[in-house]
Image (cartoon, rainbow, N blue to C red; front, side, top):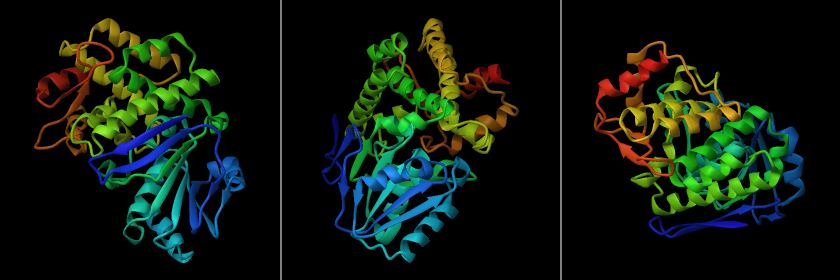
Length: 348
């Protein structure tokens, strides 16, 4: 199945997201595969068997969010220069969201921009991170604060890669599926409630619907000037949690799950979500063993960290919340500090 991306406001950029078995890929110029120490032993040979190019360079980096930084970018770029890639070369991201984000960022930088292809191997990256062209790295101030909007030339989503995914990583991806449903599609939320996402056929439909929803958003708003910010439901809180725990305690999807619970508490406080709907969302997250609680050690420091979020501007904090019921959304930037802190006190 094919989900098209068509960015009419960005030089009419078009590319396809293919959800199927990995096809045979042929390139006329040099390529470099960017992957990590965990993914390479599992999937690199499979990709190489489906690949033809005049020169193939493999760059293998360390696995983990803590390595998503400028030092790793320098390492990748050095390898590309050492192997004499040029402006007609292509990078291939083979891995999860961290690999995809860094590969895309390197592609945007190398000789002022070369093509890259996304081959996501985690559920989180298949339903979210590989789609839409956000690239970048973390620094000590927060998550993804250094980067660029840079679109891939193609995305190949092969659900078979998920067979080797550890249960915790799989659950982290489910958090992003639930996020899409809560924000955009109540019927999809009810479908997820009824079905078992671990069933292969159900999983493929969940990937397809999540990608369709994200594609609709990205096609309207590539650079997050409006509706694309809604995709950050749960992330305003999650990014603070990840930064406080130095990206070592929670997987990204796990932090997002906690962030969704926090956002829902705020929505309930503001009368934008019923208590029962909040309980339903939390129960669905818990069904897949996702964390739903977090201990805030310093409430004031936690709140101040919101201001480093990319979505916040002009000394106002943007919160992404439901707007009356599941399947709706609103961006709120006028919430009084005392109201937010009242909600955060429940996590102290």
